[in-house]
Structures are given as C-alpha cells and as structure tokens.
Length: 124
Image (tube, rainbow, N blue to C red; front, side, top):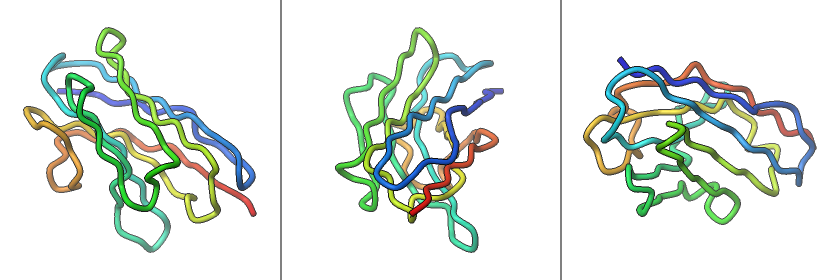
C-alpha cells in the first residue's frame, strides 16, 4: 500500500504564502498521479490541483487557479503545493491524494490513497 504524509500547514494571515508538502512511501513506487484536495467545515471535499507522474501535466481547481503551484519530485517521492495570496476562504484541511495508474486525479472518487490531512487556517 501507498502511504502519504502531509506537512506544512498552519495559521497565517490573509495575503501570506504557505507551502505544503506530501511524502509518499510504500508500493507502488511509480506510475501514479498525485494531487491535493481540501475540505472546509460543512463543505464537500474540493479539488485543488493535480500533477501527472511525469510532471508535465498539471491541473488546478478554479477557486485557486493563479494563486497556487504544484510540483513533484519523483526521486524524493514527494509533491509540494505552493499557495500564495491566501484568503480566509482557503481555510480547510488539505489532503494529499494518489491515484494509481491514472494520468491525473481531480475527482475525489478516483483517489486510491489519502493522506491524513493538514490544517490550513487563514485569518482576515
């Protein structure tokens, strides 16, 4: 099985930047898309961004497009999410996700493995 562990969440003020990281371990060690989702209290889990195994294809959710950058390092088995100009509405638990054999993962039902989540809180 694949294990995913997120880090980098915290409390920041509006307009600040934050970088989340996710490290994977276990098997498989290759051939999976990685992505980020978030879930705010009382809301459904929302797609944030996804990156293909090669790193050449990247997709972002509409609510964060232009403010985030996703990247991955297959040698380190990690994926990062750089978030800039954070807003109070970005407050949520952010989850790392992996989809085996998929090009990208932008639908929660297609996720095979989830991380435990990391809290991001943006104050106004």
